[in-house]
Length: 207
Image (cartoon, rainbow, N blue to C red; front, side, top):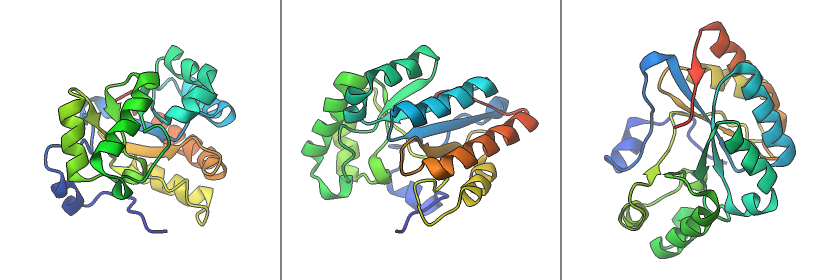
C-alpha cells in the first residue's frame, strides 16, 4: 500500500487553484478531519474526545453510512461540527469517468448537504475537478496537509500519533478516519494530538 502522508509541492501544482490543502494559519487553529464515517461507536468515541477538549472537527461522511446511522450523523451536526461530502459509496476516482463520479457526489449531497467535498483516497482527476466546479458551484474540494496513516494496518497507534503531532501546526489539515479499520490506531493517535494541542494552546474548528 503506497500513500503520501505529507503533501509534496509537485502534487499541489497538478491542481493549481482547484483544491484546498491548508486552512487559515492565523490564531493557532489546526483543522482536525475525520473520513469514512459516521459509525455509532467510533464516531461517538471521536465526538466524546472532541467535546472533552472543547474543539471542533470536520467529518467527511460517506452517504451510505449516513443512511445507516442517521442518529450519529445528526449528533455530529448538533454538537457544532462541520460535515463534508465523501461520496456515496467511497469509489476510487481514478477508476471512474467524471460524469459517474459527479453522480456519486450528488447522491451523497442529497443526504449530507455540505459545501465541502473530499475525494476518497485523495484520488481525483483534473476533469473531475472541472466538472464538480461547473455543476456544483460553491463546492470546495478539501485535501490535506498531513495524513496520520491510521487506516494502515501495518502501522502502530504510536506511529500514527507521532505523525499526527508532527502535523499539528497552525493552518494544517490533518486526516484521521472514524472507521472500524482505523480504530485501533485512531484511539491512540487522536488523544495524543489533542493533548499536544492543549499543551501548546492550539484549537481546532470546522473547515
